[in-house]
Image (cartoon, helix red, strand yellow):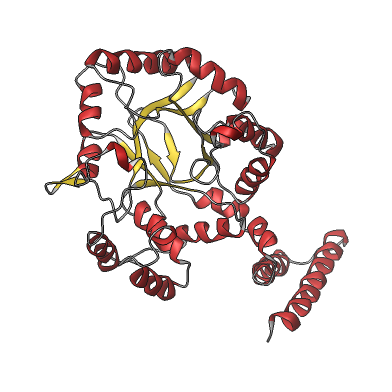
Amino acid sequence: MSAAVGQPRLLVVASISVIVLLIASQLSSPLPSKVFNSFAQALRRLQGITSTFSPPRQRVVVMAGNLAMKTPLLHLRDGNKVPMLAFGTGTAWFKEPEDHGKFDEDLVLMTKSALEAGFRHLDCAEMYDNEAEVGKAIKDSGIPRQELFVTTKVANGIKDVPRAIEESLKKLQLDYVDLYLVHEPWKLHTPQDYRNVWRGKEEVKTSGKAKSIGVSNFVRKDVEMILNGSPKELPAVVQLEYHPYIQRENDDVPYIPWLQEQGLQVEAFKGLSPLARCPEGPLVGPLARMAKSHNVSDSAVMLRWFLQQNIVAITTTRKEERLREYAEALTFELTADEMDEIFTEGKKLFKRFYFPERYDADDRS
């Protein structure tokens, strides 16, 4: 049966089922519960079938609640939990210097679409200059604050972290963020610099204005500066560029497992780079084959690779239909052989996309 012919018939049947249920509810002698329940189950199945034929935006709406419920939660060392699939506002949405101060209504709409689609983890940053847009989307969504996980980061305000969080919270229209990260280590030059910024983070956490604290773009020597600085509160998260073309290994010493052994959970950004930025790379063919095998998008395969490593996947888009593709990452599992193939093929190409000029050409940390 074609979609064009099948959809009206299914809708008619669904409508009849609704009418029967409504009539039954008004009868003085109601239908037996088994009959009533069977009608309800049939209607739910029909709703699922008809959604297959809906246009892209409606499909996103139909699966909205499911994504929120199915997204796995990663436990942090401080007892908090982070949704492992996040909508980011960096790569596709950060503002160029000439656009700073301009309000981006398109980002508000896309963030609301992500929330509508079931994303409950939003990642933004002071540096992106779009916290105000994220805040408006959250407010407009009507979703209870406790159902959301909001991350932001400090960079320009690193000299006074407590003041910086106040400015971020004002833009976000929030009383607290769930995760507050040091965006980058490049303004930290001495052990005292690291201690100072981390004490600021600890103060923010103690005040309740951030539930968890961590770092971003820190390589091992940077993390060790924090760990060796007698911190009262250990970092809960390290966020960094991580994908098959930058597996964070120098001299065969893997960084990601080391972080996890220290109790630091990992979040990955630019995770779809093998697809979006390397169209001739060695993974294009294998990812397409795996996507066909699992009947999902190649983006879903790539995101699934992170989830099965217990790594939070931060992704973004300017196209609403991509949100559904990303949600497919929660619907299947890669085999051990598929996971290994992605690791192996990925090592055939090295690519760093986030500020590569700050690293030596052969530095894979």
